[in-house]
Structure formats: C-alpha cells, structure tokens
Length: 238
Length: 284
Image (cartoon, rainbow over all chains, first blue to last red; front, top):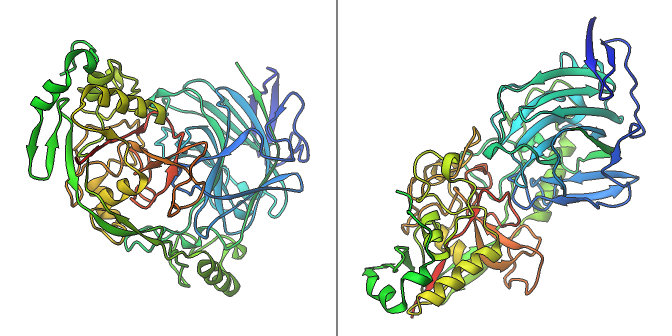
C-alpha cells in the first residue's frame, strides 16, 4: 500500500491511500465548485474537429444525459472539442467505454488534435489512465500502477485531472484514487502554446481505401461500439 | 534573407511591370512576384471513393493479445463489420476538368505574402523557426485572408486572374493522374508531416514533388480551397452554395499520415498555425 500526499485545489494536504480507501468516488455528479461543460441535453459548447486524422464525421449524440460517440462511417473516428480553450484547470468527467475500443481525453488540444492525452480503452484495459502525447512528443509520460484495481468495467468511472503551469504539472485520479502525479520537463506544445481545448477522442480503425503499408488498426474499434461521457465539469485555476 | 521592409506590391509593381517580369517556360510560368505556376491540363478523375476493409481474423493487429477476452473480436463482430463496410462503401463519381489552369508550384510563402500584403500573419516566423522564414509557407491565415491576398494580387497584376482553386481543381492537381491513394511510404517522401516534437512549418519544396511537379500538396500547411464545406466525408458532385466553413485540403506538418492524403476532405477553422494556401492563375 502506498500513501501519497497531494495538495487539493483548496490547498489542504490530504492523504491519498492507493489501493485501499478512496477519497470519494463521487460517481454520479460534478464536484462542488465545478462548472458544467456539458448540459446533459445537447452539444452546446462543443464542436467536431474537421481536421483530425481520426475522422471528420463521427456520430456524436446525447443519450440518457450522456455524450455518446460512435464511428461514422465504418472505420472513421473523430474528435469532439470544447469551443473554449483552457490553461490551468481541474477537469472532472465520468466515462464508460465499450469493450474493444480506443479513445481518450485530450487537454491543451489544438483544433486538429495535437494534445496531451489521457488514454481510455474499453473495459479499462491496456493503457487506460496513461498520460501520452497525441500528435505531440511529450517529455514525460505516466502510467497507473494498476488501473485494473480501480477501474469498473461496464460501469461509469470518474476521472479527475489537474493541470497547472506552462510546463504542466499533471495529476490524475480515477474513481477518487490518485493514479500518478507528473511534471513535464518542458512545455511540449507546438508553438509554445500554453492553453488548448478539452477533447474527447474516438480512434480510427480503417483507411479510406486499402493502403498496403498502413498500420493494422482494424481491431482497435469493435463494430458499433461507443464511448460514453457524462457529468463533465471544469474548475479553472490561476 | 528576410525582406528589409514590408512594402505592399500594389505600391511597387504596376501591371505593366508585372507582365514584363513574367517568365514563361513550357508548362510553367512565373509572375512578377516570383510566384511559380505549373500548367494543369484537362482530364478526369474519380472522387469520393470509400472502400474501408475489415480485419481478417486473426489480424495480428494491436489487439491480437488483449488482456481481457471481452476485448477480442467475436465471429459476430467480424460478420457485423462486413455488413457495415458494405453499407458504408461509396463508389465515388467522375469529375471532369474541362479547362486548363495554372496552379502554384508551391504554397504561398511568407515572403510572397509580405510582398503583396505588406504584413506577415504567420506564427512560424522570427525565433519560432530555424533559419530564414521567408521560404516557409504563410500560416495563420483564414479563408477570408486568402481571398484578400488574391484580391490585392489581382488589383496589382491585371495581366492575369488569380483565385483559390476549386476543391476539384486542387484534388486533380494534387493527385497528378493517380487513381489510387499513395502508399504511406510514398506519402512520407512527399509530405512534411507528423513533426510532433516541437515541430514547425518547413521551407516549401523540401520534399519530393508529385508527378506533375507540385510541392507540398500533402503536408506542411493545410490549404484553403474556394468551396464551402458540406459536412460530409467527401465532396458532393456539386459544392454547396452556402455554409459556415470552407474546405481545407492536404494535411499539415502536424497531421498524421492517415489523413495526409489527397483524399481527405477537411474543413476550417483548423489549428491556425498550420493553415495556408496555394493559388490558381487562370489560363487566358
């Protein structure tokens, strides 16, 4: 059992017990003090990227108070971006990705989807909860020690992400348990940008027509599968 | 070398002078600003072909050994995939290019923009790039900015008519006679792309040209075309008469090889610092 100390936004030091007691999963509502980014009814405040390589025409609907993203047409994913850019913030959201899928939550993203990414795979498998770069070489990645111990497949899972600093200091909690805390070695963003959009990624799995030397991505998204997000809120920080 | 001062072309080069400075070679012409154009001859192409394929079980792909059996494709998944592929495939449609036109051999550069407009809106200039930015494509321009450039150029050089290419003119010139998409190896030889490690735009003409001698149709900066965006995967046979965004083509230095292809039908606003254009000069 590992015990960490972390500074919550209010400045109070809280003990974080990894692998045992969770702070508070809070699944089902946005934490107090956060501003909703999604109204539960429509996609106000969001738009689809028309320049990401994942695809420009994804199916994005609101079903039962959740954003539901599916490939459209077959093999073409996409990226749903906030209209606004954010610099320092805490983001809260709940995710339920179907099995056999690959997507993620971007932050400080460009319109075309160059961004820091929290990976999100169906069932919480693989790299779920990892910090990676998407069309961006980042100086320091991060990976949860054991995402399988906190992820609840086929259920709503909460993610709380804290991003502070031009050279970003990033912390991720999944279901109330801190996964990692990392400070990059530089501002990795293109053109030294210090802000960007929040975005939800839906991975591509087929090229427009067969390309003989393309990556084999065919099984990265099961036919008809979806990623679902709800209770999305943000608290901007100085 | 960076130009010492930004002086609008309109103040320095009149129509007669511009015409006098033009150089013409077979299939190519250079205008008074030094912009080079390549002649594109009429022909036809099939646009909008969509033929995705399903993985073949077992594919050996990234999920060949998933940690949980529930992530594996079942026989039903493969069957459903074949059904969806059949449902979504599109044969495309034939587009005829009836008239010849000249199109920019390169994307419009920062030096050319400065000469014509007297300004430089690019993000990637000065300390943001290595070396001289003059031969980098102008970036951070909206569709309206590109129209303003064309308007000033036309007012200055009255011996010719310049404009943005239509989407089909752009694709016809970029494909340079190719019926199928390029391989990823071919795309990497022609395109400045996936420069993800503090990447920037690159000087134009740094990669291999396409079969008709055009550089950077793929990669470097997205290129505005004249058409409104139809919010579909590919263009329609007739472009929309109105819309909220315009079409972008070709990908950029920050695009992936997957969409840095002459098939990709993208749209604004793009990321700003990777958006530029090339222009057409009509044949008289």
